Structures are given as structure tokens and as C-alpha cells.
Image (cartoon, rainbow, N blue to C red; front, top):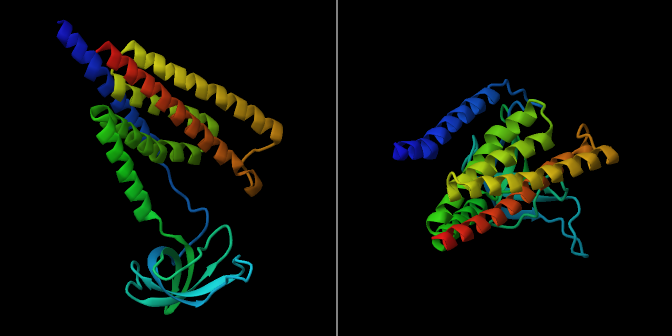
Length: 267
């Protein structure tokens, strides 16, 4: 009877909560996604810089204006072709091109006419490489606990994509959503590491309390400084939401390390 009760606490309740959370995700993602800007005929493709026809490097070592380069397209309707394109030195898009650099190309096609410009450097391979290395180090050093931590990170990424973005898109306050997401991801990560114990609950509550306090302070600062998030100059509100999430991850890692240490000493 006791074994059955333990199994219910260990797996039954989490399974029920996971089902409710899954239904919640399905519900908030059931929304018509309207394009903010009409981009008919415009796509983002990948390519490799093969030539630098005109550089924009000045004698002082800074870049001004545009580069004229040749890019061999590796995706899209013009895959395999070499296209002349420009790369600006602006802060919104563009990249300091060099031969062999992998880039993202913004491509507009209208009939036989093709207009291209370098949007940014293609960082996909680097992101995947460092992600794999980070998880590998976690598993090598932490063993089973490291694997659980990696599962917690995977869940956090899943929650950011399928919970954070849809809720903000639906009009919910970005800071409130960030705090909610912190609570969910902290609870799941702590459960992976420590299981259904009082220490897990205490670590979760401690982390979330710190995040809530930070959110309240940021909300007050937002009101006092007039940041509302409705125009370009106020998009820093998104940085606030990201900052809370980073603070939460730091606090979570500290709590996780403390919890793992205590569990090791108890063994």
C-alpha cells in the first residue's frame, strides 16, 4: 500500500500535471498568427561568400556603407547559383563579409528578378556545436544528475517557444509571463534533480520568490521610467523580461547545486 502511494506521488501526480500543462500549451497556441509585415515573395536563405567585389573598410579600420559580394546560395529556389549581393554596415542587419563566411541572405523574387542582401552571419552551426558541447560537459561531469539538468534545459527551451512567445503574442504582460515561466521551469528542473521532496519545494519557492521580487522592482522601474513597450524606443521592456529569465536561471543553478550537495551528503 505504501509502495503504491509512493508511486502515485512520484509518477501519478506529475503525469496529471504534465497532461494539464500539455492541454494548456495546445490551447494558447491555437491562435491565428497574423503577419506584422507583408513579405510576399521574400524568403531568408543560406549561402557562402565566395568573392568580395567591393569592400567598405575605411583607412581608420571602421566599415562605412555597403560591401558588394558574391554569395553561392545553398538553399532556396536559386540553390547552387552565385548571386551578387550587398551587405550593409548597419546595426539592424548586415555582416562584415569575408570569403568563406556563411551568411543568411534576404531574398526577394518577382518573376525573373531577384533582389538579395546579406541579413546576418549564419550562426546555426556554432549554436548547435556549443549546445552539444555544453550538454556533453554536463553529462560527463554530473553523470545522471547532469543528464537531468540537461532535460531541465530542454524543457526550458520548449517552454520559451511554446508558452512564452504565444502568451506575449496574445497580449499578456511580458514580465508576468516571464515570472510564470520561471515558476514552471524551476519546478520541473528541481523535480528532475531532487524528486518530490520538501527540499525540492523549498528550493523552488526560494528561487521563485527572488524572481517575483525582481519582477516587482522592474515593474516599478518600468512605470517610473515610462517604458511601455509600444514603440521602438521602448522595446527595452523585452530586455527586462529576458533579464529576469537570466536571473532566474542563475538562482536556479545555485539552488540546484545546493540541493544536489545536500542530497549527496544525506547519502
